[in-house]
Image (cartoon, rainbow, N blue to C red; front, side, top):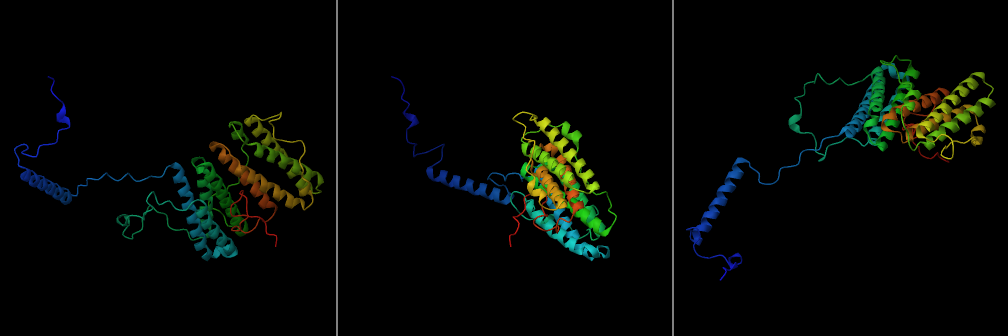
Length: 352
């Protein structure tokens, strides 16, 4: 007769087990647990799972955090530089720079405290002696201008590292830094430590790139060219006519190049038109119209979804447009809502 497998479900014996009586087995088990607890508590051994490794910043976060750090440094320097005798004529601009840069730090997301948001480890604090690797704080006008230029360069070089939405804000902040540097230097005549950025349209870089979803940019640049041609034809100033016709030709060539690299030249896919409605521009002052055109051109470049590798090309073109607008007339206080983030939509104009 086959042996039964009832031992799988048979209740355990309550008698002796491995030569130990039930009472002795319980005492021995309790003693082992007590010894184990004593060993683990005394030696600092932890039985739970180890803590996960700390989260480290990736390239995008490093770039964003660097832009925040630059903004805070500019704000601090602009505040300190107000006491510089060389800054007597631009104290108001320095106040605006400090306020705008503090706002930029928040626009860019503020400081990153890591996954836990914990403060710095007190054990890592120094004994109060100066770190020779850390540059001394900037307290003068020339140093503040240098920080603005460096901040522009840093933001420009990091544009390809951050996602699209952050890149748009970072490009706008970079443009503002360049404009602020030009404003301070142009007002005071102080000699900057490094050349100020001037921008430009790099057609060679555009020819090497491939674009998608740039219909609004292509159409906008072509429309601006048409508007400049109309303004030049109606203006009696020879110098302005020459400049505006030259600008129109540049904008039209750029639109044509972008359309070609996007594969939308000719046919129904081409977003350009033969004639644009520029009537509203012709009703007012032609110089004000040119300022509006350049401001819009800058906005087109800043808000376009350019490939990461081409974002610096867009930034340079936007800066060229904004500097042209600045040369034609004042654009407002540096910390005003309409100026603090150039190229991005500002608040609706007041109707009061």
